Image 1: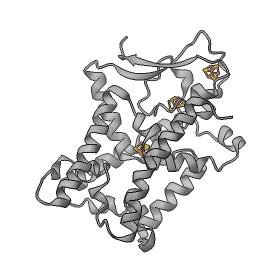
Image 2 (image 1 turned 180 degrees about the vertical axis):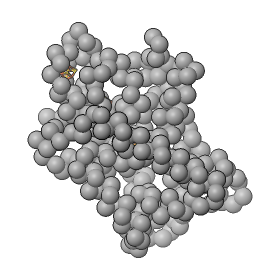
Image 3 (image 1 turned 30 degrees about the vertical axis):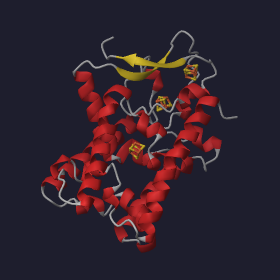
Length: 265
Ligand code: SF4
Ligand code: SF4
Ligand code: SF4
């Protein structure tokens, strides 16, 4: 039985999908022509480097870039709620993994020491992107970008087929694989959170009450970002997407809360 907080989250995720489906539809039928004019993740592929107001498409793209910058900036205060509630790609991957049996979902977790290493790949993807942008060869990443691949469903290229297969098969094998290991936008958001921490800015974080916790480990079986919750009283891990699945599954109600927290509090 789905709890109230998860029901609300699901409704928000569905509402957030509506504009995505609209843009996707217009892109597929060809009345919208450039995916980057609508994609906030284009902050990665173009960024401030290309922040100009030369034409209508450039303005729209700049607004998309601006939206991406705002989303990344707000993680300083709110953490990655965008990923848990609004990102259409994250919602797709979350829904995909629900197709697996409950037994598989709970038991097939990647060991934490491997998780930590794999989670570092996304920073490499971001760094590569920055290098591509600076050298004017962003098209290399775009050939493999899932946001570009989805609207290309009717005219799939090799890169689009490869990335759609990777995120779909990977997403079926392990929850939110793209989000945990590869998403360059996640890496950017984590860098903003890190900078916020350097400036001692308080950020919303998930708190685990150690007094009511009975160390059953159920929360860890359900965390979509495979965070080792046993390590934390305050979940400092920047990959936490504030989905509160841990709270929903914990047999001790009220053990998980959220509050604004500074790292040295
Ligand atoms: S990690 Fe990337 S793809 Fe996943 S929910 Fe966040 S922004 Fe979306
Ligand atoms: S599910 Fe709740 S009680 Fe069990 S380990 Fe996690 S926080 Fe503790
Ligand atoms: S720690 Fe809790 S809120 Fe954070 S991603 Fe995991 S389940 Fe979601």
